[in-house]
Length: 425
Image (cartoon, rainbow, N blue to C red; front, top):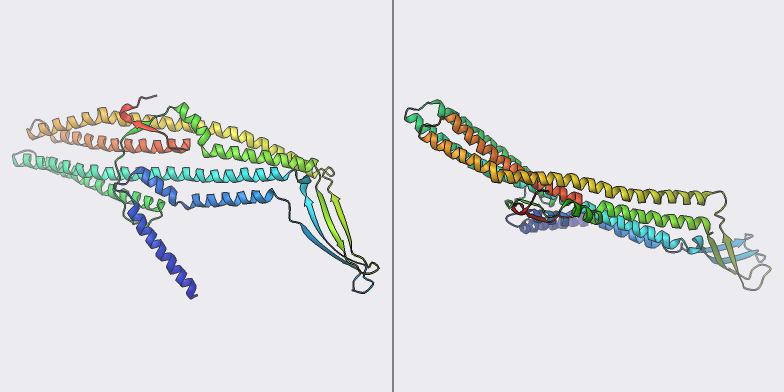
């Protein structure tokens, strides 16, 4: 009991040290690639898939060897007496399908191990996608916090201008309306801070850290777009997408099982034995002998039925492999469409919407301070800036989410180029 308590204490200490070290490993500012790399490195599901693949590979080695020999001991006509009938000892070895199917069984097992190992790539793809989305949520929430803080300052400027006009004889309702707008901005700022904390907790969970562990502020990703066209992505994904590779490995495994099952149906299994006879009973000399038995796989139809089943499995696996390629192409087309649309949306906000809304606010604010514009016009222009800046953050986050989905559907990180150098398809 004491030993167990000591071991638990040691494990807890190691985990604490690992958590402390992990906190120091996070770069500042925190970027998307660092979150993805650490999430993949620490994910238990990926490590478990590697172990299962190694186990399957060793089982394949076992399938490729002969079954264990059997030691046979026989004693006849008990109880013991000087008239004992026979005492015999021997070793027997079975040769399945004369050994011709062992290599195919091993090949099937190794192909299955490859499929399991590729499953770790699929798990890595899922972790990469989840980590990219989590970082994007963190970036979006942090950008909202900063924007709302700037909007609060804008609201204070508008309130100060309204109060100054009220002191100069302007309408008293202007200051009240400005206070309402400022209060709305404060509420939005508080909500964004709560969302940012939730995004931090999700990243902590993916990095196997305590849910309340501190995380550096996120780096602001530059707007980018896919550097490859859809045809190039589909072509490369057909080679690198884990599902396609897994389907290919499973088809190889089923084909090897088909060959093995056919050989086990056509070629009989043989058992051979070497025997030793002790000098007992009526025999006073040592003797040796051998035994042989042969399986008859052609009778009753059991082996043929198994061969037919393996043939159908192989055909289905090959068809499934072709189907996986079609599915991947369709998913990439959809993800690429979303990424292209999101990239166009961000560009439109940067080049058109934001400059126009900010210019309108400057004109409205200047007009209000000189009593040439009323407060509703100013508040409308202010809200247009707030909404357009928030919409631009949402669009940038949607672009990052779309790129994460495109990476996930392709099975590898798609090369990117600056949005200013990108041309719509």
